[in-house]
Image (cartoon, rainbow, N blue to C red; front, top):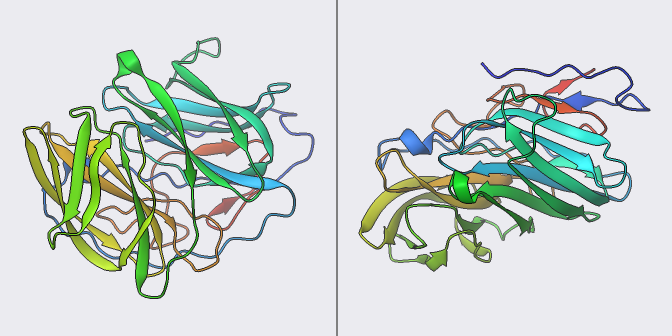
Length: 291
C-alpha cells in the first residue's frame, strides 16, 4: 500500500487545507487489448483561484524506473510545496493549484534517504491561470523531463478535445488513428505532444502503428471533456494508449485523473493510489483531508 508522509512541525507558516491527491495507476498497461473501458462520471467543478495561481501535475512515464517520490519546491529559498510518494510507472497526479513562480520538480527513488540526490530534476514556471504537465520519460539510464503546456479550453457540444503525448520507449515514432480512419497523430516522436483536436465523444478503437508494431486499444471520451492520450509500453513489448481526463466540466478548473478499468473518478471520495503531502498549496474540490 502507498504510504502517507506526516507534515513536519512548522512546515508552513499558515496552516492550510490539504488534500490526498488521487493518483490513477496505469490499468491499460496490463489490459487485454481491445477491452472496454467504462464511461466516467462528470467531475466536480473546482473553485476559482483567489490570486496569481496556476496548476501543475506530474507524470511518471519511464517504464524501467521504479517507484519514485516527487517533490515540488520553490526555486528561491527551497520551501517545499508538495510531495508525492510511491509514484509508479503510468501514474499521473491530479492538478495542484500553486502560486505563480518558479519551482523545482525533483524525483528520488521511493524510500530513499533524505540526503539522496535526485534521479532527475527540472525547473518549471507556474503562470497565472495556466496549466502544465511535468513528465519524466525515457529509459532510466537516459531519464529526461519535459514540460507540456496544457489547454483546457472546453470543446463544442457533443465533442471531446484530445491530444497525444508519445512516451513509448520501444519506438521512436508512432502513428495513431481510429478504426474509422480518423488520423490522431502521424509519426509522433518520443517525448513530443501533438496539438489538441476535437472528435465526437464516445468510445473509440485506436490503432497504433510503428516499425514492426501494430496494436489496438479502446478509449472512452466523455462529452465536453479534455483528454491527454499517453502512448506507453505495454507488458508484451508493444504499445498501448492511456487516456487521462484533464478536464470534464465546461468552464471548470482542471480535475486531473485517469480513465481506468475501474471507472477512475466516478466518486470524489474514492482513493486511487498514491498519497500526497501538500505543504503550502491551496486545497481544491475532491476528497479533502485537514492537517
